Length: 171
Picture 1: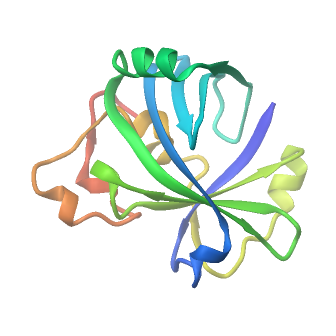
Picture 2 (picture 1 turned 180 degrees about the horizontal axis):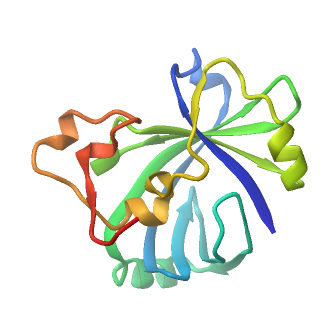
């Protein structure tokens, strides 16, 4: 089981170069259930995610680069690209700060994983976190993959207004 909370941020921390950075590209073969393929730097995975917003099952299977590229070509909707910075916080938790690129450039989200729902509910986020969007399906990558990006919105995005996008399905 994976338990995580997701937040919008009000400010990106200074000097991101001091933190580990991963380059992620992912596409969705299905959004119900969630089946995605991901390139994480030079590693490749097929992932199944169960239903649930804060807590859900998640299984990762390794892929070769060739298998990843083949499956990515079959993905529906938007291919999501982002830089993920790993930032330790004062409580000892690891913040995964996602700075989106491509069609979602300008969107910035922070995720924190927990060992239990109780731990997640007790977590006090740092001051640079803004709104908790854990239960807002708009900010889940699988739903972002289904969004239709309105022309011209790529210049005008903020993390509170994901590309002025609309979903192909009801979120």
